Length: 206
Image 1 (cartoon, rainbow, N blue to C red):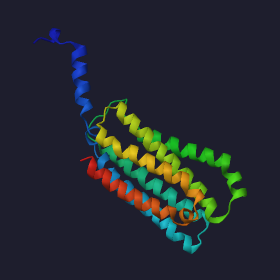
Image 2: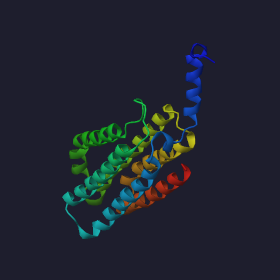
Image 3: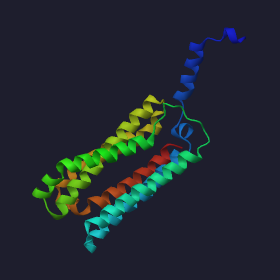
Image 4: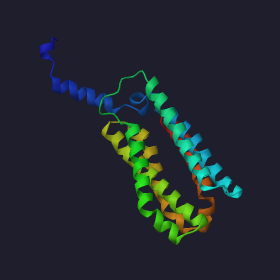
């Protein structure tokens, strides 16, 4: 068959079918392993936060702990992208933009609602309100990422961890400020659940 006999539309359909069978590891090399990195770093940070309550640490310590976590994840993600040998299309998911958008939006919400929360809650309840926002934005981010991956023709099995994680984080985030038990233990509960979720996601996407 000569080059003149090749139908560009047929060729594009064949390429789309090939893409439709791709897993997240094929499209984003190393991203499957990042589930384990996320699970350990985020899970342990949340558990340590809950344990730190007993030490009555200042707010600056918690801020440093969580921003340190974000820094570790950002460096790990950057190294992953830098070392990836497979060329990605320009329409691929940009994890940096998604993470930055979530952090900036979260701060915008805190700027808006922070004074109101401070006036109407104290101690554990106030912290639970702030952490519930983190969970809601993280859950929303996972749901958005899952739908972007669908547009990228990533197989459903590899998208399920994003959908499932987004749902349970939204539920936990909504309940957290309204339960005294969750106000005191919600951070550790999230850490354990997220660690289990990440290990399951790693196993599912093989």
